[in-house]
Length: 73
Image (cartoon, rainbow, N blue to C red; front, side, top):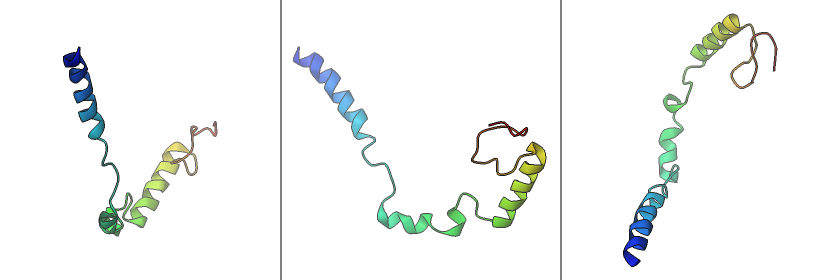
């Protein structure tokens, strides 16, 4: 009985402890705040991508909204 419990508790403990250190530490945030680490580092490139997306989809600001080019939500 103890061996069965050991074989269940040990892997569960190991799997759960693997996710204990998620997130960014305070001393790592200076590297992530640099402009080259941003999702869209170049604002001109981002505006061109938005223009191309708008032209193809016929919808404005479609990055964060649900819906299609016809105006449906």
